[in-house]
Image (cartoon, rainbow, N blue to C red; front, side):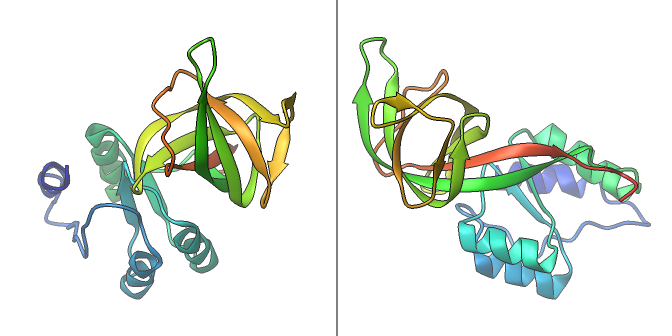
Length: 190
């Protein structure tokens, strides 16, 4: 994907505006990536990749823009709009929590329950969830059910365990990570 993205972005260059790639890599976006963006006054583009908790905190603290994509043409459209000064995001993602998959259970309905330990933040049933394997997004979807001690719950805080079903996804494995987020409307006048 890196080569295809670089080629697509290279075609957007004009005499007035040039896109410069400072660093490229695969896997999780790390705190060192954020530090490089701070020093270079750059944005970070994650293509099917997400930041680890330390990178997310550093980016928020220093105001570094991290944009996430999983379709190349959406990435190029947004960069083209940014080059023209027209890109005003209507929604932004707010990451609320992270969890590690410690165990999995198959239900009679063939759904897979992920036994989670919430490592950071919290999970609420209304959040969206990304399943990450080795730092790469393998599924982005909704929470089907959230349980604690066989009881339906609305929220689970950091430091606790719970069971979670991801709607329409049955390939959860021990060692996967989950990122919980919500979309927040951004006031363009702010």
